[in-house]
Amino acid sequence: MRVALLSLAALAVALAACGDDSGGAPPDAFVPSCDVVEGQPPLGLVEVATGFDMPVYVTSPPGDPRLFVLEKTGAVRIIEDGLVLPEPFLDVSVPSITELGDERGLLGLAFHPDYAQNRKLYVFYTDPGSDTVVEQYLASEANPNLADPASATEVFFLDDFAGNHNGGTIQFGPDGYLHIGIGDGGNANDPMDYGQNLDVAFGKILRIDVDELPYTIPADNPFAGATAGLDEVWAYGLRNPWRWSFDRMTGDLYIGDVGQGAWEEWNVEPAGSPGGVNYGWNDREGAHCFEPDPGCATDGRVDPVYEVSQDEGVCSAIGGYVYRGCQMPGYHGTYFFADYCAGWVRSFTWDGAGGYDNFTEWPSLGGGGDLVSFGEDANGELYLVRQDTGQIMRIVPE
View 1: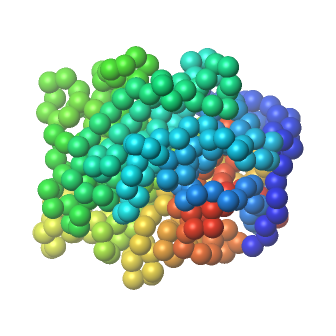
View 2 (view 1 turned 90 degrees about the vertical axis):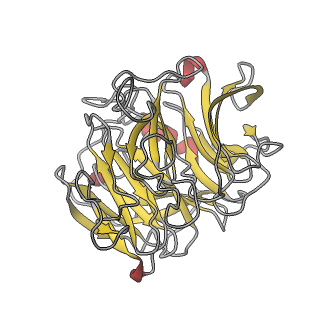
């Protein structure tokens, strides 16, 4: 593995030269226009920054060269011009977060598509009772490297009963709505059968309009209004969608769903879907019967695009991103993903019809069982987050 230090200032200058060709991109997406490059060079890693306390995610606001790093312990930190700023952008650790066991802590961050104008950002964390909380904050007008802690406004609250299977990703879709990924609530085997229960938020991806608070329900949500089911639900039948993302060019939704004891899975929902997709849990784990086995319900349950047996040493699907940056144009449209325990990084290109092409294993990007997340900056470059070593790494051509 090649490791070097990277200047984000130099990266910003290089990416600015790429230009902006949004083409058929979803609204608010920045898709740089890159030179055509034949072939696909080998890939490696450069270290962007280190020394973080249990980092779990990295992202950027639209059009912003800074990187924002989430520490599970409660702080959001900024990397600017290659340096980690000494003062956190935001810290929700006290009194909001007191438990970090299982899958608790500060887990998700999303910037509003109009962040440069409205300064709105959203965090996802678990409170001392293991409940799920999504809050809105405003960045300071006087200092863009600080959020105003007094601006905290609760967006969403879910009373939970266990410390695990919390999900953790929040992202704005190409439609401008906030999507919230929530696991089945915890404990083994989905004991409450929440994955298939449309009347609860557990085991779902929710979709809400946060332009004004309290949030409202998009009229085209699949279970909105008189239709049976929770109005907020967009997709269901998920066990623990820890990391998932939208392809910033096409709007396709890629979901890594952590398995129970047999299968890890990665799903793709095409842009333009009307929602209401059932990914099967806990009737099925991956494409296989779970409850009962055999004889589980299969009608309407969508097969994953890719799955791996836990007999191969995997234990926790890490959803990644489709590459749309400038620095590796030979890989445009390639989806990178990982597994936490096995430590590998793999990639494929979705074929648009439930399968994939160009499957690749990346020994130069994997190694070690502490890869907890991918990240994407404002220009579509991709990052790896290593929790145990406190590192943020960028994927680069060698």
